[in-house]
Amino acid sequence: ADRMGVMVIAGWACCDAWQHWPVWGEEQYTVAAESLRTQVRRMAPHPSVILFMYGSDVNPIPRAEENYLKVFRDERWSSPIVASAANDTSAISGPTGVKMSGPYAWVPPRYWLEGADKRLLGGSFGFLTEGGPGAAVMPFESMLKVAPESELQDPATSKVVNFHTGNPAGLFYDLRFYNPPLEQRYGVARTTRDYFDKAQLAAYEAQRSFFEGYSARKYQATGVIQWMLNSAWPSNYWNLFDFFLNAGGGFYGAKKGCEDLHPTYNWVDGGVSVVSSRYSQANVTLTASLHHPAGEELWNTTTTAAVGPDSATGTLVKLPPMATPALLRLRLWEGGAAGAAVSDQVYWLPVEDDKLDWDN
Image (cartoon, rainbow, N blue to C red):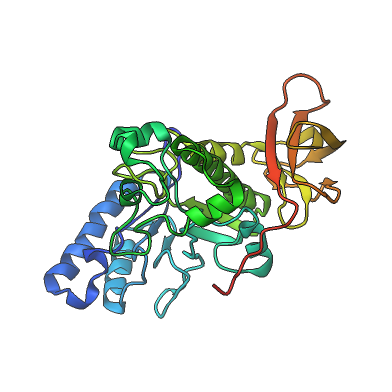
């Protein structure tokens, strides 16, 4: 991590003995403190470690927190520490300054920027320690390694497909939150293969908009951790690449959304801006064009801009009203519009905006 510039946020695992403080005895308090001490000594020399969350998902009870803080003081730990990954306040260390508000299920692309404007839930503001657009159906090729195609017929109700999801005792034990919006947005699957292909398209769109939303609002949005990178078994939830190391639509959507020089569409106000993660100014040419789904070009415009280092521009282009669904193509060049574009991507836009029910 040090050599490759990968930032590490460390801490105790959630949902297990580290958070079972009501049943701790003297032995557990001692083991917890000394376990922290060994971790601190191992990690302190590494510049890649930027934060330690010593309560995981929940603030520790006072005695446990006092023991942890004493270890950090004794070992002269110099990196930031946070009581937990949740938006909470400790009576000892104060507010965490982060949020763990999800979502963990599919949301439409406008969720991130609308949520930021309304300061709600996982919208792109603050530091989101855990969140993402939920289900990540494996590519068809991976599902065939799990079961024969005969057992994957009607994937929306397939016992095999739904088995490979989340905890049977939790909320995400099947794809009931995912399949209705998939069908509404992309149409009824004509074949088994069509279902899995549409799922990859949905994952691409969802992950791209997630990273775009947080990047476009830097530094109102100060950071985000995508839940999650991969799974320890063949799962149709929460992964950018699956158990078989097969990269699906979500992987490529995240990759596209994290381009270091990236034109992005604002799903709330219909504008187009450019986000830069570079550390020097970029002089760019941006072309936006709308196309009928059959391919006919309906509208286009070109503009230029100077994009500052590590910044997001304001609106550079505003789309005209649309009477039919359309494809939006954004192309970006450094300097003039010649040669290969540094970014070239397509959005599929409905006539009516998605409507989010924030109360539910």
